[in-house]
Length: 261
View 1 (cartoon, rainbow, N blue to C red):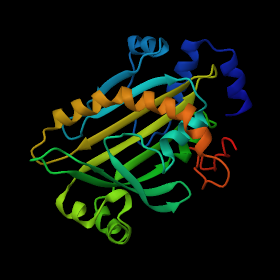
View 2: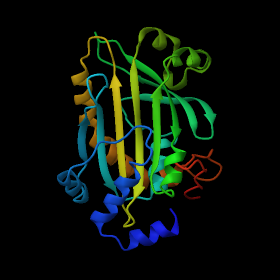
View 3: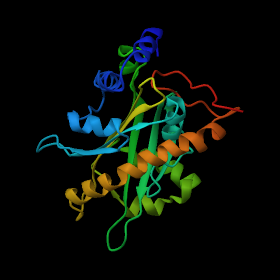
């Protein structure tokens, strides 16, 4: 952050610092966040994870959104969420298929569902929102992803040759490709050792699984996703992202320096 932001935060109340962080994260987002009520902001400041279902109209899927104030360094939280070696959700199999540029990548995801349901899979393109970082003087970072409708054929040669994380061509052939999958991470420091972190995901899985059930399951996982992120930032990121680890890029598009070692 710039020196001006740091000075402002040093003199701001927790309520004012949170309001500034929320305003920053509403600046040029790729996937906008819902507005929080005064009660939700108060619960955030009290240490709760605030969960909400963002209903965006009849023609748009709802997004499960979680907000938390996590006590960790933003760089460590970012590594814990973006490093290709991390595991954000233990119920999913995910991996980078191709690095398209410094902070743009093609990711494959797969979830194993109990029979007789068919497994689901997706390919998303992810990137950092440089425009937001510039507009907010590096105050808020957004990492967003959107479904690549033709992604399955793009990744097939990699899966056929390498079987990454146990995914084989059989998985590609037998799993249903989700028609909608998008989401984002937002992170903005408050200046008191806490970082506003927001995670959102909008998914339509198709088939016989109703959208309301998908939303319910996504909402149920939000607290675990955010609490485990904070734990990984303290216990994993600083020991993993060291030495000659390939760079992970911050929301402004610059490599994050090694955290230790």
